Length: 414
Ligand SMILES: Cc1cc2nc3c(=O)[nH]c(=O)nc-3n(C[C@H](O)[C@H](O)[C@H](O)COP(=O)(O)OP(=O)(O)OC[C@H]3O[C@@H](n4cnc5c(N)ncnc54)[C@H](O)[C@@H]3O)c2cc1C
Image 1: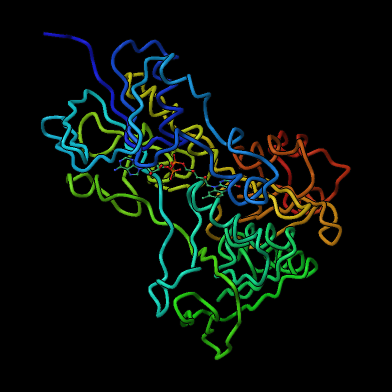
Image 2: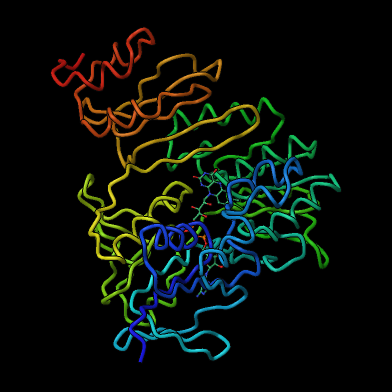
């Protein structure tokens, strides 16, 4: 009889791979099995809508670890294999090829998948989605051929694909029901800046309208909008958000609701089971509520945090949400989490596309975004975390260091 423990990770992407790495770094000497449906070893997705998509960087740049890493660290990497079912009562996982794996601790890092548009013509050739490196390769070949692209949805993926396609010289039309791009996260005021950035780069933006159907003979040739227009195209990219992959957990009776429900230690409702990354709807101590974050930094940091908790270290996950996006020559970082706010304060020059935007609620910064301004992110996070009352004029004044604002707790609101 062996006393060696087995920790199994489902989902061989950023959260899963960084969790496996951390288990070893923290001294776990038992068996680690990392299972992934995709045939590729773990890779990062942000380049897939940016430099990799445009053909400016190669495959070697996207991987989380070198090829030899997993074997060198005794991590059993099972690629092209899917965890099909889970019995939490006896700690056993069944793979799609019938193999059964007993686990002591299980991490579900199953991520998210694109929402599909269930409209007429949705199955036509040339209606594409972007999540995997294969999707990016397919899209890259289309970009190589040139022509006219319609992007459905002006969220982060849609906006980045539109930018990359324009950079490659294609005709690009973006169709979005909201009044500006990225409205859900940034609001109308800051979304308008992104609207202008895309318009300046020659993107046709059809805002305030949806998509009714894709039309064509075998392959998509036109997109029919809800306001009655027909937009001719050679192919379409749909970017209308993602949904967490919860099937495995839900069928096992684990509590799910907009993701796998986990506490601040990333522990799910079943004993010994954890979740991290896009799939985890985690209680966040700072916000006092559950949030599910669909961004790179969250997968990068939650994987290791989950691993430490799997080893019994009891570390709450408290990082503030953070993400970045690059579109044309406009780079940005966003910190915080704002469902509502009462005003936006700008520092710098929004027209010149070099500024910081702050979202405020009751005189406190709840989120901040630096656009083509760098090395301010830590101070922005400190402002949010310290919940300091800020004076709008000082916040807007580039001569007042953000660090100074973040460390002064007693300002009267202006
Ligand atoms: C094109 C693109 C661009 C992006 N750009 C940015 C950006 O600029 N900034 C940013 O902050 N974020 C960006 N993101 C988001 C970021 O990539 C994700 O937040 C991150 O990939 C989440 O990692 P994850 O490990 O949680 O899940 P995922 O990356 O979704 O990986 C989950 C893995 O689990 C596998 N899996 C699922 N179910 C099973 C199962 N039952 N058995 C075995 N394997 C399974 C899946 O096949 C998948 O490989 C981008 C995403 C995309 C797609």
